[in-house]
Image (cartoon, rainbow, N blue to C red; front, side, top):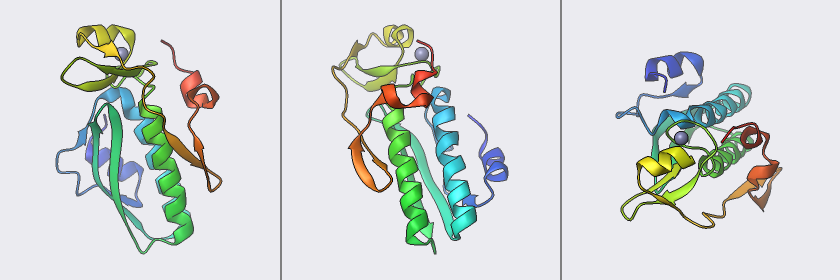
Length: 157
Ligand SMILES: [Zn+2]
């Protein structure tokens, strides 16, 4: 994943100074994180306010992004929250290690989202059926369907 200084340069309306431990997840999720940051940058640049990134990490097999908004109009923070729900939902379908199609696995100790190859390295088994994530589309909450998400359907397994 990119260095924090590179992220700060690429997304000038966001602040990364609170990410003391950097990005705490595997490189396989880099595109998911960039999609979120790009939306957050666009929304913040257009609507005003500042988005402070507090932590970006893996937790229980999924991507978590913690952030705080300052002087951000409601319309903007709704757009940013929508982008975040989508990023978290996507992370349960993308191998955190390599970015190929993945599924939530468990090896008796840890949850992790991995492709078949990297699940085998962890000696992990598929968690069936995995979490049912919700996303917000045009203000309405709906279940996330990875098959309907072009971001996921273009990945290889
Ligand atoms: Zn993998």
